[in-house]
Image (cartoon, rainbow over all chains, first blue to last red; front, side, top):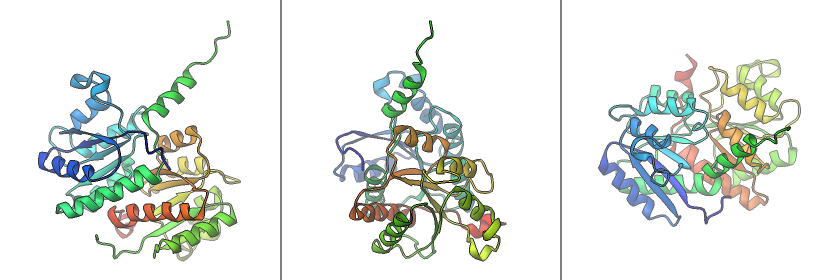
Length: 166
Length: 154
């Protein structure tokens, strides 16, 4: 079980601002300390994760513990963004859960094939959203151990600081 | 809550007979009314998934919707099996959830890096295990859509 005092960061890639509001509201009802950040498309998602553009300041883009990803977004869609995240050695350890209106088998299969950690069809009403967010919270933040950003960094720096022989 | 009519098949790789029993009971306790099969190490796991050796008959090796994987097992450990599954285009779409006693950051990191869908540390008490399996079930059986294996096959 995870340390409940640690603040959890969720990054939600979603172009529909009503949907963002609904998810935010559902998360607010949960008794867990977390920060939720929103990006409107795949391009901004990757800029956020790579701390580029307007996400240059580290405080503006803390490494997420979990990414919720819409599939149908302008500029770069969720399918391509998922492929890029999972191909990047620095980002691939972040679990990505697809959160979409799509019901197609092709999208479901492709999500898992690319390394997605779940495929959730968006609930139609707030009641359903609340239920989904409750289960998401219980599973990812109470049952599962995450490879959090700090842990990733500390292991990497340990691997990089090999003693010099001279 | 959601469309839950489909029976989910779990494959559980666990070498410790006591743990197998506990997991079995925890699944029953948390009312996971789905089918599950056990394999005892990474070699058996890969034989099952590839229908080799004693798993040649497809009736003995129904394709799992999800794999629960212990890390420390004899012959072939979970890390190696996970890498093989995720490196195989015919198997990689099956989500693999690590369920282990290891709390080592390196194991957590590496499991996600190789492609585990999530990493669960085995709770020390039976009640804790039941709670974890409940959370696991709510997520993977109730709110998540898994590939329809009939469409995957062909």
